[in-house]
Each structure stands twice: as C-alpha cells, then as structure tokens.
Amino acid sequence: MTAYFIDRRLNPKGKSLANRQRFLRRARAQIREAVQKSLKDSDVADAGKDRKVRISNQGTREPRFRLDPSKGGHRDFVLPGNKQFSAGDQIKKPQQGQGGGGGKDAATSGEMDDDFEFMMREDEILDIFFEDLELPNLVRTALSDVQMSSWKRAGITTAGAPTQINLLRTMRNSFGRRLALRRPSLAGVKALEEEIATLEAQEPPLQDEALLASLRAELDRVNIRRKWVAYIDPVDVRFNAFVEQPQPSSQAVMFCLMDVSGSMGEREKDLAKRFFVLLHLFLRRRYQKVEIVFIRHTHDAQEVDEQTFFYSRQSGGTIVSTALEKMLEIQKQRYTTSDWNIYAAQASDGYTQSGDARRCVELLENDLMPICQYYAYIEILDEREMEVFSSEEAGAELWRAYRTVAEHWKNFATKRIAKPSDIFPVFHELFKKQEVE
Image (cartoon, rainbow, N blue to C red; front, side):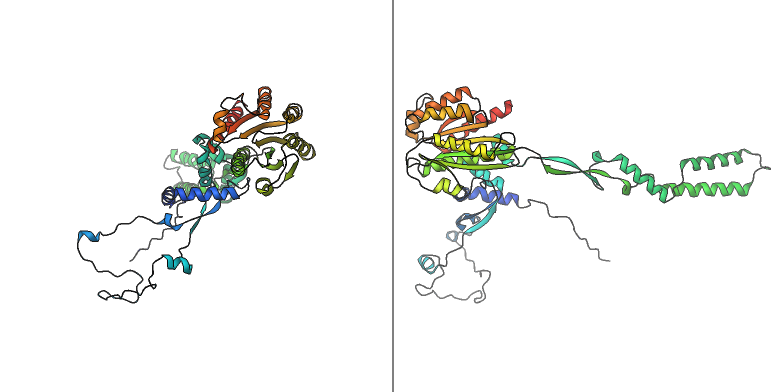
C-alpha cells in the first residue's frame, strides 16, 4: 500500500530574506541614489513609507562560474531555448548591423533592457535615509519604531498560551459538559464502595451474592464512565484574548518655518527638508496624530502647501518675524494648547532685516516659547562659513539673538549645519530632554 504525505505547513515568512539582504548590499550605491532622489521628490509625511524603487538592471546580475577557454579543452553545447540548431551545426556569422548585441543599434532602436523595479519596506528606506545623517543605531531603532501600540483584552478564545488560561470560564465549561453527559459524581462512587464493603463484611450465609455482583458491576461501569467523561477536557479550556491596539496619545502639530528668499538655494532647501523629515519621524513615534503646517517667508509670511514650500521661488527681502507672527496667528485659530502639543522647526541662512532680530526675540520670549513643547532653529551655512563661525558666540545678528533665547528656555535648540551629518546633534539634545522628562 502506497502512503502519501501532504505537507500543509505554511511557508515561513521571510524565507528569501537572506537573498534580499545580499541584493541590497550588492546594489547599495544604486539603491541609495534612487532612494535619495525619491525622498527628495516625496512629501515630508510620506518619507518613511513603503515605495517603489527603480535601479539599472546592471546591479541585479548574480555572479556565476564560467569555463576559462584559455586553459584549453573543447566543449560543445547548445544554449537553452534554442529551437533552430543542433549540436555540430555551424552558425553563419550575421551580416553587419544584424547582430543581437546591445550596443548602439539597441540604443537607437529602443530595445534596451528594462530597469529593475521593486518595493522597499519602510525600515529599509529609513535605513538608507539615516545613513547620511550618521545617526547612532539606538536612535535609528527608536525612530523606525513609528507605531506605538499596547495589548488590550479582547474577550475569550479557544487557543493561547498556558499563562493566559481563564480558569473561571474553563471550569464553567467543564461543569456544563459533565452535567450534560451525566458524569457520575465522586460522592456516588464512594456510596457504592461503602455499600460493597458493608456486604463483603457480612458472614457468607448472610451475603447476597447476586446483589454484591450487581454492585460491583455498577461500580466498574461508573468508573469507566468517569474516565470516559473527563473532569476537564481540552474543549473546555478557554484563554484570555489580547489584541494589539494603537496606544492612545495626544495629538501634535509641527510648524515648519523657512526663509525662501534668493539666498536659500537648492542645497539649503534640501538640508532643511531632511531636518523637517527627521523631526516628523520623531513626532510620529510619540503621537498618534501629527499635523504639519508649512510657513514660508521673505519680507512677508504665508501658509502654503508642501510643494510650494520647497519648490516655489519667491523674491523679496528677509524679515523673519513675519513667520513667527504667522505661526502665532495660526496657532490661536486652529491649535489650542489644551488639545495640541506644539513643535516648531525653523530653517534659515541667518540673514534678516536690521533690527528684526529684536522683534523675533520678543515674540519667542513672550508668546511662542511658553506654548511650545520644543523649538529647533537650524542655520544653514556652507562649509567655509562653518570654519569662520567656529565659535557659538560668533555669527549674524539673528544667530546671536536666538542664542539669548536658548539661554532662557531649555526647550529651545540652535544649531548650525553645512551637511546632512550635522543635523543629528539637534536631535541628540532632543532625545536627552525626553529622557529627563
């Protein structure tokens, strides 16, 4: 007789994880370039989400072993997929321009190999994004864990861990089953045993053999039935069920303020966007709902969408206080401090109209800092300016004014950056403050 075995086990998750990780390491340079370009074109709130990435198929080829024809030897073979030739056939050399190569002819005819496109998970994208920022591994892990959740009771289930057994429900089910199946009680068994012992203690002339045999048979039947109807059966066991639910958390609003005058070029805006993305990831880790408000300014401030905020050009002078006034106006209209945690991130090259820095300090000291959970200001310079302004006290008028605010408020941070790796010190200070809380 032939036996057939059917394997119904589910395929394990991540069975090709090792191959995927090896591919990501091999094509790291191309993937990094594609991800950075994709992040540059995406919204701040969508920076850490799953996305499609397209790279050249040159980075997807696997290494393979091939025979070295220079070592001698002769080997005839027919390539797979051949339907025209057999072993020993001689193949004519194609005429000029009729070859199957992928050179200039392929380029002009448009028959180039397709690019390789695949999905990247959120954790893989964040790993690429954090690479240039030079974040420590501990901070990378904290920022990647964007979903805060907790386990909540969700009724009763028939499967679970032994430590989650619900004893009350289990014993109730056991009692109902034993009652329905008429399982003999322990008291009835003891009564039969006592009656049998009483008859056996009598003298032979007084013993009723037929009654004694009947009682013994009844006792055997009762014991067998008690074994057949178990006291606790696996069908009685119930477990406490738990489901993972998002942890209730208050909501937060993130104000992004940026100077968009002519002195803020593409490099400065790209650094500012990285800074805003990092702060948004941090807030997503702490709050269930995070809203973003974009305020751009030159001599005048206005609330805009993200596309306009980063990519639209605007001419005019620079008056930073207009952005702070606009932020305060929006906060009073839509984000009350009793319902919202307020965070602000400001990016600028440090230049403002003469005397405007004093107005900025007044707004921060009297109106904004008392309601803000955290305010971070980054001044974007080039590397030559970073060498000139090596001292914290040296700098433009706005920088010196903001330094006085930082001395009075612990939740106010000021940093200068010239490259992506300079952004992290702001968040190092932020994480340190959260630990103190």
